[in-house]
Length: 288
Image (cartoon, rainbow, N blue to C red; front, side):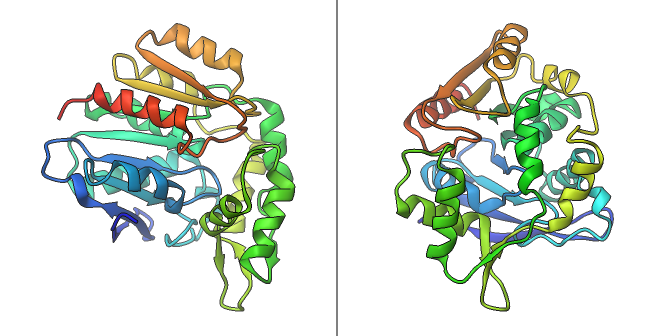
């Protein structure tokens, strides 16, 4: 397993936020890769990516506010993309990063667009995983059915079996070992000895209040990625990024590579062979 160090930075509203720093590729002249997870996920989602890419690249995997080892927000209405953008800008400033690669899954892909819109000259390349400027209502409705609903399990095996039963349509080929790995990425052991989700249940409040809408216009933000090495990965069975939306993205962004991962829904783990090969092609286009 690749070694990392824990890093922390502060938000404008006083939260202590966390990231994992896989510093292996530092000093090789390559820009660092900043990994931004999805709505209910955390830095552990990128363990496979970081293991593969370091030591050749420095990989920084963040816990957004309210997830993983980052503090929970005092005001749940700050669980919105524009606040996450502020938090990410604070991290970039804290680390003194002048140029970087962005890798964003789902919500992290929206934040990637916003970071480009805030200053595209800094973005050496970007990977957007299973999200676009238009969100399929079917996927939003599915998210509403589970977001913010607290659950617990007595053992990791019980949690893994729960995810297998509820998410097998997303990852139909997975083994029980893969479901165990998944459970350990999305859950934690509580102080009471139960396995629970590793996010603040209150992230559901702004999502449901807005009817699933984001708090900005995604198309202009997406267009900020023009002329930047860009890869969009889509799960073949995704219910959030449709094939039609990805085709429109491709039409608007000629330099973009689009890859569809077979037998996967929302979202690919980026450990799939198709995603790995595409990521390597993207990184080969990025100079130091």
